[in-house]
Amino acid sequence: MADVKRTGLVNGRSKWRAATLALPLALVVLSSCLPKAPAGGGEGGGGAQITLYGFSIMKESLEKAIYPAFAAKWKQEHGEDVRFNSSFAGSETVTNQILQGVGADVAILSIERDADRLKQGGFVTSDWHSLPQHGIVNKTPFIILVRAGNPKGIHDFADLAKPGVKLIHPDPVSSGGAQWSLLAIYGSELVKSEKQTGARDAARALRTLQAVWRNVFSTPGSAREARTQFELGHGDALITYELEGLLMKGGKTPVEIVVPEATIFSEHPAVVVDRNVTPAERPVVEAFIQYLWSDEAQRAFVQYHFRSSTSEAFNETNAAFAKIASPFTVEYFGGWSHAYPDVIEQIFRDQVQKRK
Image (cartoon, rainbow, N blue to C red; front, top):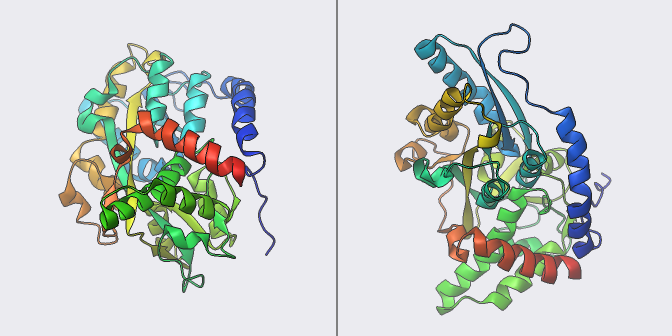
């Protein structure tokens, strides 16, 4: 089968600059095409409407479970219908769309840095950290997907650097999942070296990330686009959210999940986009955002293979969840305020991507 196009792998540093220059213009056009529809508009009329922009893998749990459950609850309690409009893409893309003016009322993002960007841009004025679980609505570990039978013998992140391995990896410019993946690879080597020697071996972690990235042959725009390419038969391996692997296996895709010894748990914030919410819309939007931490919603997330942020007991009900030997979070790097400049920019962009 022909290789997919090697998107996103040319001129490492210049790509980040080009994206910074080109994206605002593209998003201005996009925002003019995607305004928030007025409440009560659309076929049927009446009722309330919530517009949600989410990172790519939120689609199933929201549309199949959480939206209809909340709408039924609101209808029972208030006698009013609720309709949802959704848009899903990479977390960086979603954030840029909101910053350029699309009419989202709520955003669920892959990385905390994107929530902070919305706050810095004046779109989120409330303290999202005051929400339950400091605003983190769910979480999931990063795993490796390989072909049935694991023909390349991949058992940990470092094995992805083997000669001949073709790795699909979403684009760190547009995808929060891609940034989590980079932290997973780099942090995994730090954690293992610290366990083995008592000290973090940054040189070892850098060598592993460089070697793995040399085998990346396609960088789709989001984790979901990367999954689609892998499902279509491209590549030997894919680093992704655990839930993507479980959804693929549930759909009978012939893949295997490889659980690294040490890997990161991604944690996903939900925010109200205050600038876009009118006083009339505020009650239903606030009720929905709080509903995301209800037992009903958290169980729905677990059903669709997210880990609950509120209850380990809920997580224990999903027998498919992997046991991680050495889990870590972004706090291992000092939080996103350090992880992004220190790892994504100074290590990946400047020492890995530009030298590929």
